[in-house]
Image (cartoon, rainbow, N blue to C red; front, side):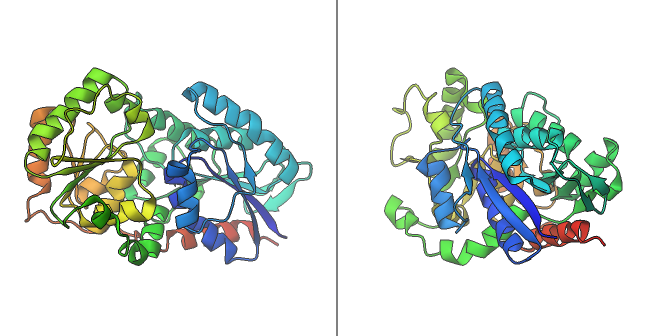
Amino acid sequence: MSVTIVCVVGARPNFIKMAAIMRSLAADRLFTPHLVHTGQHYDVALSQVFFDQLAIPAPDTELSVGAASAAVQTAEIMRRFEPVLEREQPHAVLVVGDVNTTLACALVAAKFRRREPFAWRGGRRSRPVVVHVEAGLRSFDDDMPEEVNRRLADAVSDLLFVSEPAGLDHLRREGVPDHKVFFVGNVMIDTLYAVREQAAHSPILEQLGLTPREFALLTLHRPSNVDEPAGLAELLRVLDEEVAAHLPIVFPIHPRTRARLTTLDRLRPPRWVLSEPIGYLDFLRLQSEARLVLTDSGGIQEETTVLGVPCVTLRENTERPVTVAEGTNVLAGTTRAGIAAAVRSALDAARASRTPRLWDGHAAERVVKILADQFRVR
């Protein structure tokens, strides 16, 4: 049979991961993929540019939910996604990551009933098989919206594809049966390897007047870091005094962060280079050439680990512990003392790192091979 699989994206990290998965699905004639973009990230800088640069097929369906509170956005995605399933009657729904889109579409798929049952390795059923790629990650910080999303998405998923060993341990402790869990590696890294050479030709350094290895790169978007203007201002002051005094900071400002910045007066050149959000290829070049990356993003912790670039994570925790245990990542928190110590540690030339197991550019191929095995039943 032909397996109809609805693949869902909604935000920047989803696009990077789904690019690799869509390529691998297209190479297997068993699958008929249908790409849905919920519109959680909907502007050019955070959405369309990734489709263009990563050669992701145009979405078959766009839900155009736009910005809203977490509850309203999740509810609206659910409301608009159910008719897609009714129309397409998929055998499987594949979600990635931990954003509102991930949870909303996993929940709808778990409750949906097809008009006709079908057979797969798990038996005969009417519900689509819910597939979660990048399952098992845990920060153990319940104040993070993403932590809620990832826990609940895992709970309703039938197949869970894990990117690092800690995910296997977490799911086992939570009682998920081993036959539902597969360690496949990191699909985000597949995309990095696929476009790394192309990104090396990006002119972004010249456009911003930067010299390789003579700047730091900063991203901030976590609610805990940016939603309180006074706290954000203090964090930027610490970064100005502890980092920008010695190394210019390039700061592409996320729309969420910009909306909460009360002033940019302190962030003056040449210590700071401010920009709008930057496309994936340009941003990958900036990461590759930075002396240091400072971030509160999970994906950037992974990318810097593979690139071998020192990374300081401006959080008290990480759901990607392999980037600390084996990679280039150092947890800093947000205090002056923590940031200063982490920067010193990250820049220590003697600090060893390695690429985690199965972060080899073939994770999406493993995902699709396992999916094919699940659906090729007699």
